[in-house]
Image: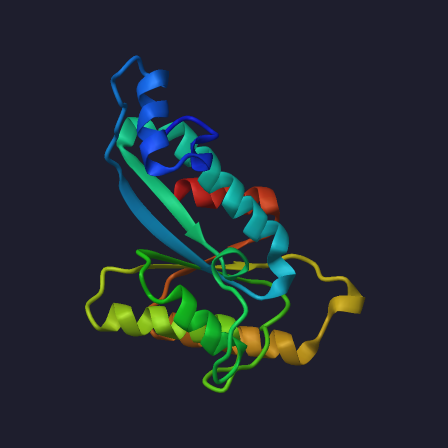
Length: 193
């Protein structure tokens, strides 16, 4: 990992020269293990998604060099781009793929937009991770449900019923999920888990 913030502006030959200049002729190269985490959720937990990114960034800065490891967070907003498929979720699935070691799901009051294969994009992403797990993959699945008051203007009983059914189903299938009430509580759980 390179520690100079502006090295992206150099061509390979220039990069080698710049590294040599910065390190008095000794290039500082470090090997690190990269663990990829994919986060899946509907749009109503944006604060939690942003907090997750903040915690990952802090963990990498605090522990990355010491442990020789880095956690990369994959979000559809940052790792997918416009494309064509059966539906938008299909495009996201093909672009992001299944190359992650940790699946993090988050839900609150919205189940999400339905796809041609599942009740929502989040459910479909969970099912893809679950299928990998059942197939013997070493993917770690972590699902969190926000259990906090909802403003009446954002309360949709049919969405809550879908979430409760999903929560019950994944529990029955063997998924231990966790609940939280605030972004701060969620942050604490991320640091523990």
